[in-house]
Length: 318
Length: 318
Image (cartoon, one colour):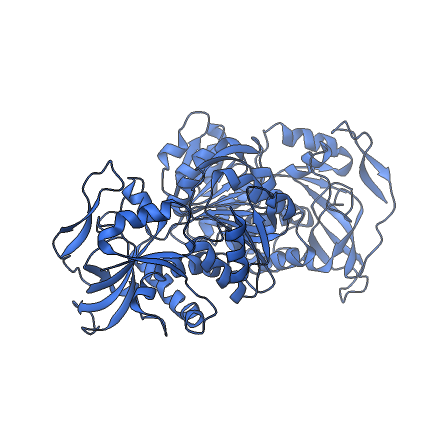
């Protein structure tokens, strides 16, 4: 089969379509013939050498795809079934071996290409906001990077749960995009003092910035508030005042999806299917695709995402 | 009535027995004639001016007591009923006004004096280990300050839940005391590199040290581990690596009991009664009383607790 191979580990754009072996199935896995693969920021980190695949997983880039089952392996699935998949790696390819627990049906009304771009973001956002923070109607949720793939999905999910949604983004255009998705309070982080405006009022924060936002996030949280850090795009380290954490009874969590055991992923996928797939089918959540490129142009897709000019998702088609 | 009054706010030992008004009952409160009051480290912080009572609560020191109901107010309780009480303040006195939800029965086999010293520690430890961290059999729990009032109770509660218990303390004598309470792994923090020995292995940490231990606590935690900070005796601030929190999927929490709404306290008290009172009655958890002093000697009790030479609890008798 063909897959994207990084030909120079020191060059994050040295991504070429090459011939590689079709993956061997392990027990409980199915072989999926890939139609399209979603592009995620984590893929850029992997190409930059900062996010190696978990032990035992494919070293091909790509955390989500959609396609048809080409070989059901030892499972009860059927050849030809259309699926979308949460992967620990291997999506930038013609075929991927996928644990059965990480298969989802194509959401009603979605094309395979649209479905390929929704799995990772849906599982990540639902796991963090729904299962961990347990957001509920009437709560205030702050989403940093509201115009990104995670952010734009999180805005819609939080609104669908009846929350009031505050967002940060870096331009008036991005904030307008967030407003159209349902965001109630818009902060341009280049101009606005969001942590002062939101002081002691936010129940849950979904953060992708990390260190530079920690103090502001703690200030913005209401008593008993939750901060969930899922990326550290601005840096890893910051000073924390544990006395403040006590006084406000706050919780700070770091989470990742990719490194979790397959059993956990299967549970997250099942919960996402139950709670999020109906919201995709009825249009409460739309997953905007910014652009679709051929698989061979993975490097260009990464360049585009790195530019910061993307609102929504990029997809690679095989 | 008589109560301990701090006659000089700048002198933490200026604690004198003086005449003050008997507290007025608000709706849902009972008047308790106090037999004895437990001494807690938080009381020392209040006398030092660092831990003022929550708004609307008594400014008399003291977070727990036992005695008899002298006036049931508008509740269905009966005069003469023996109770022990979780308070936001007011225990160093002859009478206290107590919300009904913060009353507990005297544990089977306990004297009033013994009961006065068990409420705050039982509710604090159960809320953090049982309700928040949800410790369960087979997990490893690390308790810092194992020989203190909180620590010695936490060791026994974690053992009663089937956990493996690691502790830190500052002397061989204190560690021997922890061992007798059931601790499995003993670390003298003056000599041992506990965070290296426990690296990546601890499911839940109950911490009273704060800033200076944060890096070591994060190192000691296993994937998905919980750090709960309930005091910052060593300092409030520390650098935190949010990238590490993500990679290990850790949770850091700060909690306090005193500042919580009465509704929350009532729920904590009810859960503590259900889960911990049977362990007191059957002897699974013993609450060691180090010494009993007359109420008038509150200053001497504070001096004793400050000395660091106390293993177990101090009680003031009216």
